[in-house]
Length: 29
Image 1 (cartoon, rainbow, N blue to C red):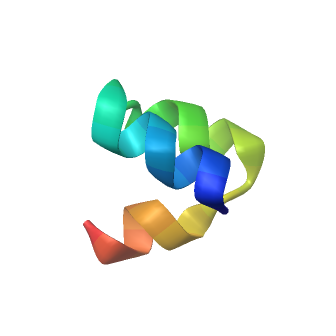
Image 2: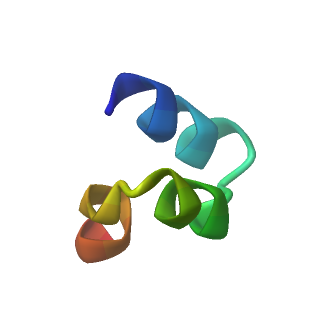
């Protein structure tokens, strides 16, 4: 989850997190 969050904050790669299976970021957005 932390890694995905970092990616979202740095590169803001929503699709990247989605591929990783972390719907947490997408849900927050």
